[in-house]
Length: 459
Image 1 (cartoon, rainbow, N blue to C red):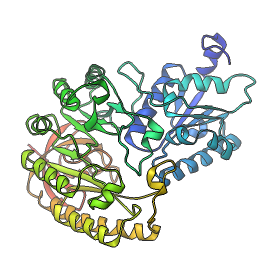
Image 2 (cartoon, rainbow, N blue to C red):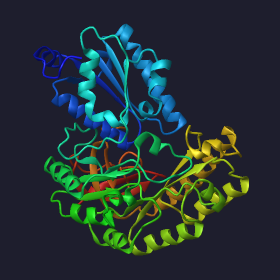
Image 3 (tube, helix red, strand yellow):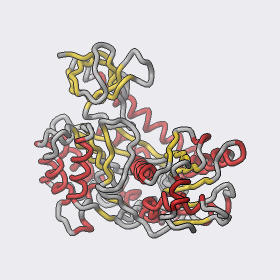
């Protein structure tokens, strides 16, 4: 391996092009942004077209079966560039790499390097190693996770200039039976409050008005640092950052929701009136098999409490169908619950066996076709609920954040109200009035579909 300080190597990296493919969740996106920032700072040239890149990096997802297959397909697809493009080095990074490591090298001969979640910050060094003269060996870099960036880490953001994801912690201490995240990301490790606030200030100075706080278990933020009510402590500091208009925490586990946290949501204008709290199921026996804390009574009481004390709250949750042992009666209970509770947003996911998780060894497996039918049933129920809730907004005036020209047509602007999170919820299409991306404007809602609204700029 040629030392980092080699002048010859430095000169080479400044003419080496890097193509990047980002897959998976928003947490993976932050990892991609960190890798891109690190590579750019080190002198590599970034290109949006992998076909023109000498090094192609696939940041993979390994959460569920569909995501794993998408990642493998991307590796195979871009591996062809080594034959019909200029690609010299193909790297798989991220969760799938951390989880399967040497297996990927064995099964996918087009790969030159496999980089796990613990080595994200070393990506430039790894690229230099794989580009070294006379290099023939393929390698795995899979240090114990998790690597966690800080406010000084170079980062080249993807997406909108006015909205950013901020990862406040990595890993997870829960033991949900179906989840492989602790295998891929390790135990929870929270960033210090000061680091997160410093990053938020820097983002605000760049024109970011919305920050989205992400981690695997946001409600548990700071527990590893010995901070009591860590999320409350963090939010109280973040609301003081000038320039921020919306602060949106994602993924609140339905435990440890304190009165202090609820009061903060209700009283602080900058904290969006939006709760993202996956329940996974509602049947007591299934929740126990999932190793989830609480039961239907606790969950219902919590939802009622949040709705009563946070005016205008939008509530997003998620459920898994087809978990081993999910009887027709258990699913019927879930359907009835979804119908009665009328959540604003709902995600429905099919269970998949994940190697190394307790659920993989459970009996009572459900046929994939049955899972898909149950998913369709829940989504149909939710679509009716969402349409009803959307139509109730017709005639109202909402503050919206303009995203820019719509991807559907350049005749419309796309925007979001605070009950619509980026990428996963709907949008407000603006068909009258002008504004720039990043502007906050008032919009009168004139029409509605199940997940999108139509409006015009007023005032």
